[in-house]
Image (cartoon, rainbow over all chains, first blue to last red; front, side):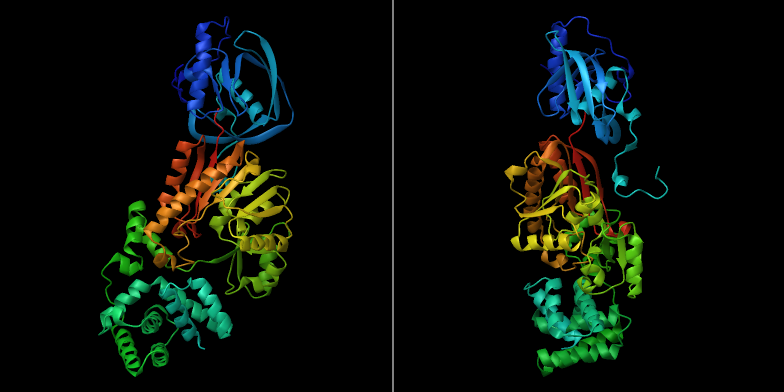
Length: 162
Length: 417
């Protein structure tokens, strides 16, 4: 296992659509292991393969209830009910913003053994699913931020209210 | 007892480190039974002397035939209020400032001390302000504090020192569960109190004990600084959430957290001192707040039943208080660098313990009423090195810029994907 370098905003790889994994071989398994280690080392709650420069549809998530590995994930269902809350991105250090996300989201994906499974997340996990799957489309959360989080949230500057 | 005598009694007590200025003053005024105007004058003398003590002492030593250290604390305090009236107050005629101090010297010293006080104060009155050689003496801050402020704020150093010697405005927070800023301002104005609202914070002209006001008894406000208000605002609790205020007394921020959630969050308030728990409860009750539960608990230790349960935690930790020197000028003379070393250790333990209460996506807000970076950004930097949190933002409020206490506020979360 190895810690990989997390790419930062501005890097082309973060804007590219990722390809499906055709075969779960040793390289993909190593990628999964490295991504999990990289995510933990960075204190992240999730990481998508393009964030380490690999344009494949691979995601790891750990929001506190154990490691989730997703290969070729698809969102199959999202709730109409939404939550507007703060999120950040390991590829966009130092920036935090409010993003509206569905309260619950269901993904269908392959596990590391190639077995298909479905999983529903609520709150933070639903947010993680949505955030990571957008990475696979080449999109960053900055495109969805309604307002950035800074000291103005407690004291809006005059004239800067949107 | 006159207001000057009350002031001298308080000053000799604080000089001997027997009491904090605010509590000694409260006690002395209660005993003296003076008019509101005299109370205000005694307060002005006590705080004025404490604010400008080094500068006043330099002036006394310049005009005095005797060394300051050879004077009794009584005579020194009597001289200090005399010099303060002569050089810092425009409203007191010189003869009154001198004669009243001489009278006190007769009472609290001997015949010779009265003559000495008379001579020194006449010389000050005649000679006036003199050139004050050092920045410490000019701004009346101990050297360690000047060094600290100037090294941490090289561009704002003198502005901060000067602002520390100004009088803070009196501010209260509107209880929006019961009234509106506009209605409360109107109510103050009807009682002849000038009131200006800035959002939920109202600056008022009222001097003295605010708890005697009808508006206070009816729970329409709570005394609060804008810096403290902004710290609690950073928490932003929602209805239904669990929020823990780990160092809560007297409950200004606690009641605000409840208020912000429309009294629909569950607000747990810890404080280490049992007698302060009732203070929090009384404030909540007076303000018609039902969502607060106050518990005796030392914030540096972990209360197991709340681990992993909170949506947000406010850690408004004990600190050196170097951001509230305007309100408590004796902090300049009572705090020492070694006190601060101790307090930083406590701050780190409280922040680490506070983080344990959070759910995995919880929000942690750390705040202090100091401008000392070692207690602020250094503590939060150290925390994020050891814990899987990141700073969303941090802000240092400064009295001369923000016209509120020198609060530090840092919002921390663990939510990067």
